[in-house]
Image (cartoon, rainbow, N blue to C red):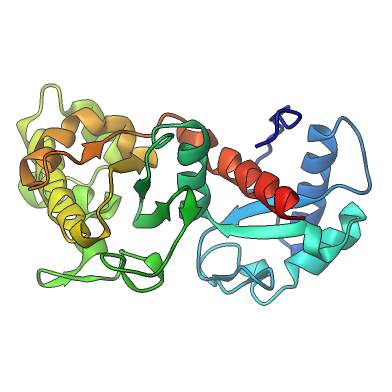
Length: 271
């Protein structure tokens, strides 16, 4: 990144009350104007979105989240609203953006080969080599996505996810709880600790499946990584490559935002 480029300020808003594609575009445009100090036109944008999403076209293919955006030309609509060219509106997978952020200014900075794993309701994954995103090569699952890789009697996400922790705890106790509550109870609740430890064992085995990528560092992020002390010992116990570093996200909620900035700066440099 050039010395004349920097981040800030940051504007945020809740979109829970938005019920239409036009309302969503208006919200994004308002945020862009706030972050740009009131500037209304000529603002570009880079956005991180979960899949399924057509990142080249800027069209959401999700039905379970933001259903009003399904099939909608978000790139065209946002470019028109911001008064910029369509190619100035870019889209990234949210896990890719998270890892780019950690590579650019977080836990993966300075490492040649990195894996990012976002741990939340499900599991997202991203891979970088030489600071660049890659989705192909030895040790990388198809399209760089690990959530649906066959694992034991199901897929990875069945065992490495928030619902896996909650399900494990429910099987042990008969109680239905949120992961954050299970984590809070772990200091005095053996079942909570065991649920996280089992999660960690599976996560370590899944990381070992990626051995051929020859990562120097794996960066867990997402909400569950805030309770890393409950599962990292089990992760490390399962990893055969003891030289591999496991470093929890340093940027946390800002990782994807920083990653979008990194992608934008790289695009500007190429231009």
